[in-house]
Length: 320
Image (cartoon, rainbow, N blue to C red; front, side, top):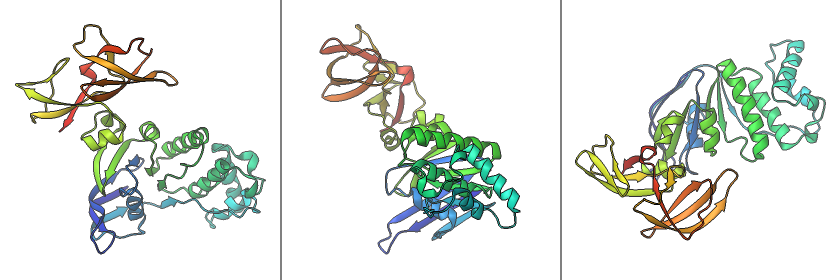
């Protein structure tokens, strides 16, 4: 378990915040991903948990054996199995060490590389070996800081699938920095989006389908924003009224790219700017009242103008 209570730290004499009043509890067996722009404090958070830096205020506690996965050099002329055996707890007998290396090689699918030297491995195979070196002594908590970002998508997916299957079966706790939102959504129990050393939103992947503020919405790739006002108990849009429990009287309507439908009776007529084919849909850029909107359709528009409307039950509001 990881517990952080109101932890803050400064980077330098100018008082720039590395982390600002961070509070977080990660339960045993939980997988938590951390996302945010470069310099927002993601790696600093991991180093704080690992004990490499100390908070100026607040407390940090971590129960159990913690490992921070760091890409390291393996001597190119060293046999892979001998290298992994050398990483196992010395108190374990030699036969058990060898069996452990074979078990992990089977999990991460590099059994045929065990007898090779490290210099003969591909980049993906080397990272599987390095990851095994971290896991082979069965840590309770594992910290990952984008270790697979430079791998091709297929190899990265292969490693992540094997890693998180193993982690879930063993009830290991993971705190994982990543830039890949799809991976975070797929593998995490909870997600954190950071900015300027602060948590902007913490919640389940499903909670991020409705970002809590404009920064999170933009960071997660939302593109369609329309300021609207509240009249009485409902929010008035060009396509009808929207009911939401917002106490504010002004908000931004966020329209997901998949929430549009072509409708000749729609009161809004958009100009088609571009149509780009994607693997499973067409990405369409439209203009209306000097603003661009991006949406996804099964077929590209056949005319330079199109009447279209959002499905309001799939839209949501965020504070203005």
